[in-house]
Length: 123
Ligand code: HEC
Image (cartoon, rainbow, N blue to C red):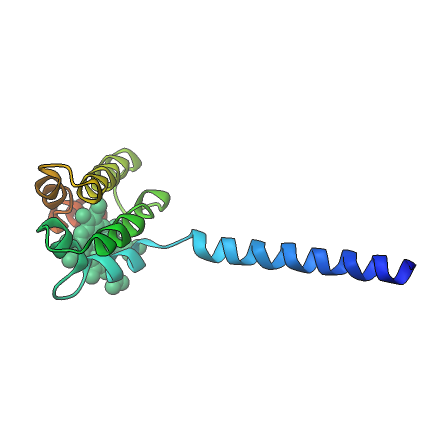
């Protein structure tokens, strides 16, 4: 009887540990990864979404990606500017997912590569 209880307690800890690892892995997506998956390429996901050519699944995927920007610190530039820019992208992407009129224009303006790179990724 004692043995059985101990075995079960051990299994519980294992399960909880497994969940914690999965959650942590899913949590953090870095800026470079967001750029690679959402901003780079031809056609880039950002271009499709801001031209209104993305499917609803693609728009949702883009929204999930850009939500990660604000949780990262940019390599350059100040935090207030970064927050303003990344918040504007998320807001516009939410508008596109919701089908709000004018949201694609808003997203195109908010995702201007040069305007952001000049401040936060100068090279
Ligand atoms: C809100 C700001 C912002 C916008 C808008 C933005 N970028 Fe970036 N991008 C960054 C930052 C910051 C980095 C540097 C990431 C790092 O080095 O940690 C970066 C890095 C990159 C990289 C290098 C990632 C790699 O290692 O492969 C590419 C490529 C890139 N951006 C493409 C684009 C393109 C194309 C656009 C426009 C369609 C764009 N970005 C718009 C902030 C932005």
